[in-house]
Image (cartoon, rainbow, N blue to C red; front, side, top):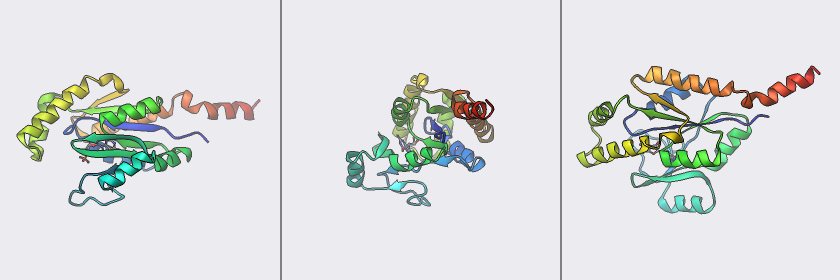
Amino acid sequence: MRKGLLFIISGPSGAGKGTIYNEVLKRRPSLKKSVSVTTRQPRAGEVDGVHYHFRTVDEYRKMIADGGFLETASVYENYYGTPAAPVLKMLDNGDDVMFEIDILGARQIKSRYPDSVSVYIMAPSMQILEKRLRERGTESAQSLSRRLGSALSELKQYKLFDYIVFNDDVKTSADKVLSIIDAEKCKIGVNEDKIQQILKENS
Ligand code: 5GP
């Protein structure tokens, strides 16, 4: 069976990547979600095994030593990583998998799986990004300027990504990500086995 495709969603905080990720998953139930492992504390309403697998630093380090991650990164003082086993199983089943990860993780996945498809979600401008972060009200002045600085330094690495979606409206942006997924699934290379099968059946 053809292996599934890997889709990476990344972008700076405040761009809306998490909301778009959830909207895309809601509208395309056949697309599988990768549940990350993290050492950060759960936020109100977050459920272990659903939003993240919440682990201690010691447990996390043991998983690294055991080679349990496809990628791992330290983001804002906490570890975050994609557990290898469930993703490899989904791909082997022929399921397409989507990750929402930071740029360090995106780089690792891209170098390990060059055929993975990466989408960068950005606000339409730095001013809008700043406005969204301010309105979220979760950042101190120091954290706000650090996040804006990270956003610019990430954007300079734009060549790592295959696509960029400027998010000025969640629904339209989710439509665009779904169009990207559909186009990638229609690529000749992705459908070669099926084409060969039809040719063989009719030769
Ligand atoms: P949050 O703590 O707000 O849920 O996520 C913080 C950051 O960690 C976000 O930029 C998110 O994309 C990133 N992140 C979440 N899961 C993973 C993961 O498995 N690997 C990597 N590299 N980053 C992740």
